[in-house]
Amino acid sequence: MSCQHAFTEKLATFRPNEEDKEALRQFLMQLMHTLLENDLSKDMAVLTTKMTTKRSYYKPLKEDGTPAHFLKATPKTRLDFCTKCGICATHCPMGAISFENFYEIIGTCIKCQACVQSCLAKAKYFDDADFLSHVAMLEKNYQKPKENTFWLANTL
Ligand code: SF4
Ligand code: SF4
Figure (spheres, rainbow, N blue to C red):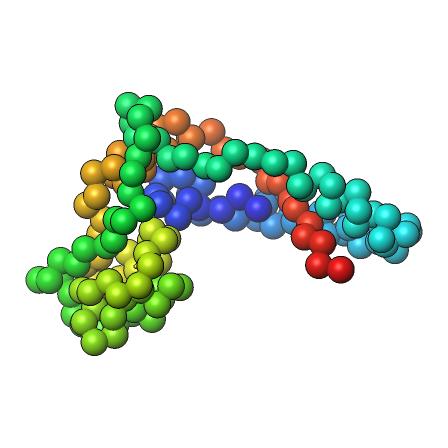
């Protein structure tokens, strides 16, 4: 389901919205109907086949169209803003922010922006040039709202 982009609040702002949630409800209704009316294993095979279409690995680009290299980028901290509340470390899904020193990155950062978005003091930020250029490229080229696409994972 479409949702606000992790890198920027300017893309898909406030999504999922009510329309998106309704689309999900419709999908679930359709799925339940299909599973109740038909043979489960046959349907799962068809649905799984549809979702295994291979795509090439995503390569981020900068504004000028050249590759953006920001694998090693990590968030910085404005020391004069930071209140040492620890919310950023609590919200980091990778456990990458040290609880002893909230300015220190001790694990793998996936650039999810959870620390930036959760910091009430606006102390966390990214300044990596390639990352910022990639975000600018996304904001420039991906303004058009996306339709929802639903996948079903075969866990049987
Ligand atoms: S959430 Fe912000 S203010 Fe709190 S410790 Fe982290 S950087 Fe500092
Ligand atoms: S961007 Fe995400 S992964 Fe990286 S330090 Fe912040 S919360 Fe953790």
